[in-house]
Image (cartoon, rainbow, N blue to C red; front, top):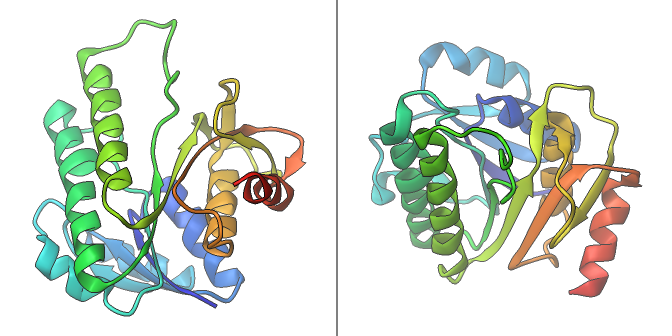
Length: 220
């Protein structure tokens, strides 16, 4: 089993991910910002690690990452705090985490990014345009890092119950996907280190997560 460090563990996808990883027997260290989040993460099966992404530097974060097999970055401003918060968390903090992983010798890095067609065809705020730009820049930074990365681009996230059935591929039609199934896909990627340096788009579908990733691994 792997030791997985989850950045953004207190978020909606992060909580699903922590629980599913623990249920599979993985050891999970969960980064969170507020002290009151620790008990819930501990109950989910993780070892809580308190730290503010907007305050940590690569040296300090590398110390937290030491001994991990995989880093999963699922943090995001979530539309709160405007463009400044988006640049700080979705952008700068991702870069700091990538640099920290390299310092700590953690080679495998999974990033929850954004589907390129997100919000297209609808009126979008300037903040959303910044969000999409920052997400692309983060993808570029990770892809150039030399790490064994996977960029996961889910469609519109929903709180619907996860079915374990998805559509996954390098370029697929846009759609929705339950957060629980995004987490299940991340768990499967933790367990399939042979899938690396790949961009995977993800929506709800008809194929079990394991089968979808098995097909992708066979094509790589």
